[in-house]
Length: 82
Image (cartoon, rainbow, N blue to C red; front, side):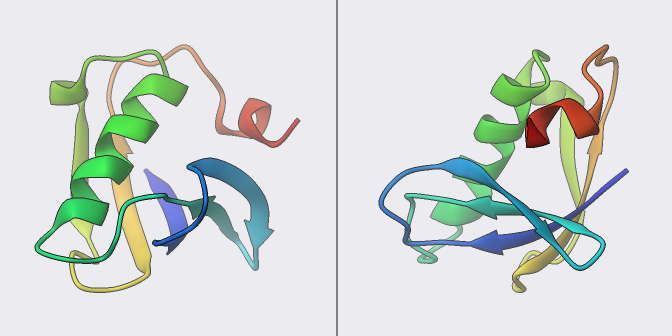
C-alpha cells in the first residue's frame, strides 16, 4: 500500500520526493472530473511496471492525500526516489 501526496496541474508528471511520510507525485492532469486520479493510476502502473488493472485507489478520491494498492510489482517504492 502506497501513501501518496498528489499535486495535480503540474507541468509534467513525476515523482517529486517525499512529503512527510508520503511519496509526493506531481501530475500534469488537472483535478477535474477524476482526470487526475486516472492519470495517477496510469503513472503508478508505469512506474511499477504493472498493468493498470493491478493498481487500485483505496482512499482519497477527492483529496491530495491518497492510498494506492499496487499488486504484483517487483519494483520497490524506494527506487522511485533515486
